[in-house]
Image 1 (cartoon, rainbow, N blue to C red):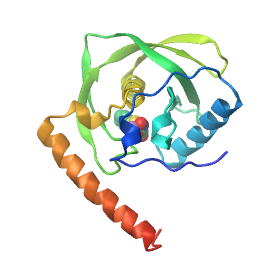
Image 2: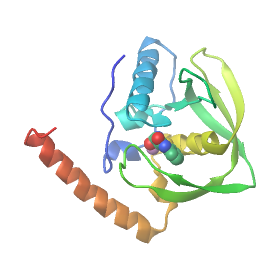
Image 3: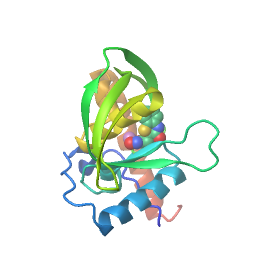
Image 4: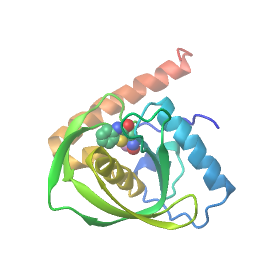
Length: 179
Ligand code: GNR
Ligand code: NI
């Protein structure tokens, strides 16, 4: 397994609509393994394939509950939201592709999601709490949408401008060999 580089906003690949996974083959399994390692290394609670430059409909998420010793993760392939609750919840969200930026986002509190698992079977799950938020955040990524798109234009513009500056600095530092 290996830790993959995470794309940083702005990057055109984070704005593309991803293609369905046709077959759960060995390269898909390998990618999912690497994404799980990358998510925990970051650390994050979810990671979508486009964030590592793979424009396919797959994401991984942390499913660890309470006092479990070992982390529990899940791979969701071709996920679809079947229904959402009328009740909404506002939670502070962040994104590994927009490091350092956190904003309150309002979304449905619960979701029913259908997906293919690594077992190649179709699964349906109803999620609430942070996992419901995470699933919606990750499915947004597969449609080229980011959490800042849920903010007002003014807030989004401020974060976009800061990220463009931040990324410029990052690339400059990488070039001069400081990291
Ligand atoms: O690690 C993450 N934390 C998080 C917190 C609140 C709402 C969504 C998330 S997902 C994020 C990792 C990430 O960028 N996934 O795409
Ligand atoms: Ni994200």
